[in-house]
Amino acid sequence: MNSNYTLTYVGADLTITRRPVTIAADAKKKVYGDTDPALTYHISSGSLAFSDSFSVSLTRAIGESVGTYTITPAASDNGSGLLNNYAVTYYTAEFTIEPGMLLSDIAHTDADFKRIDGFDVLFGKGSSSSYLKLKNTNPGTFHYQLTLTNETGVDVHDNLPLNYGNGAVSTVILTVPPLPGSVGTTPIPGSTNGLTNPAFTVQGNHAIHVHPDDKTDEMPVTIQYALSAPATTLIPTGDCSAVTVWMTGQPADGTAVKCIKITGFSIPKKHRATIDVNYDLRLKNTDGWPFNSQTMFRAGFTFKSTTMVTLDSPLGTNPLGIYTGNQVAGLVGAGQKVTAVGGFVFDTYGNGLAGATVKLFNSYVAGMNCTTPGVVASDTTSLDGFYFISKTGSNQAGGTTELPSGVKYYAMVCYNQLPNASSARYIPNKLSSKEFDEEDFYIYIP
Image (cartoon, rainbow, N blue to C red; front, side, top):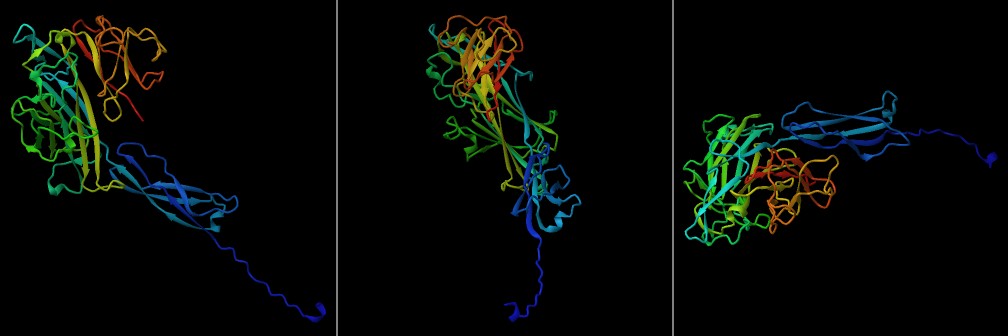
């Protein structure tokens, strides 16, 4: 064949083009005041050849105020020239700093604004020799105080249109609790029918106050209230967030208010506002209580509130710009001749934690847990998280031996059959005779 042909060879180019690869930063977010999460990226299209590798740095725009910031990726081959083999496309992402919440502190105080540890229910002679009358409480009037500290990262302002775009508005809804289905003594007298929801009335013709910081002057706000709230599946005792018709202004003295809504207040960043509501137990002056009420009456009340912060300009993945927080605090009333420890066990979201066991020990011993013997007394929480220990042993309804006084008990919460305690601590002081000590626990539930 070679003798029949004259072969001429012409070369050609083999072109190795740059390999396309796309590097995309991952969107991240944090709450105002928190530390930044680690920035990450992914290769959204293409791939690296052979065993090639290079580093990718990620930076975000500087700033710690609430808002959105750009995350920018950049690849480096550390001078090896490897990146010359790649056509790199970069995609940025958003880093969102979301507002924090209105931090809350809840206190129940007496008329002198001293914190109270539950309240005594005082019975006296009834209309006949067969019954007692619930005459009063000690203290007689309660102050419910909700102090909000603005850690949102933005100024909470009133509803003036000129402020729109540079902050947020806030709404606070308070829920007045009902009387529990059981108060330790049965039956609840017929004269209390219809008083189970709510269990408190407002005291005074100006029962609701809002103060800026620690000042005594009033903050201009809009106050609304409702006498009832519709029952929902999650909140059968009345869901104040579902109320559609509100009355505006201060409720009259003695009104049984179920829901209170407060709007239009201003809290600059890092400042505080305190909501103060005067309450009275609605069962006062009811007749027909059994004689064992002085030693058996016990009732737990959960005062709940919801705070909603609505940004003027929504951010990131929250198109409405609404951030909600829930607060809860328990208040327990007991007969004036009861020696007891009681309160509530709440979960992460402020709901009562049912089925937890609260145990009292005479003292703490290193290494003790829920299986440690020597429990003096215990009780299992009800559906609303309430417990009340006034007898030794575990039978609080039928026990006969009173809980000994003069002991600084070590209280332990055991839940979900776990060997380690979910929470534990000493009560503040030795338990006095015919005195009640309220101990509330907040358990983290993932």
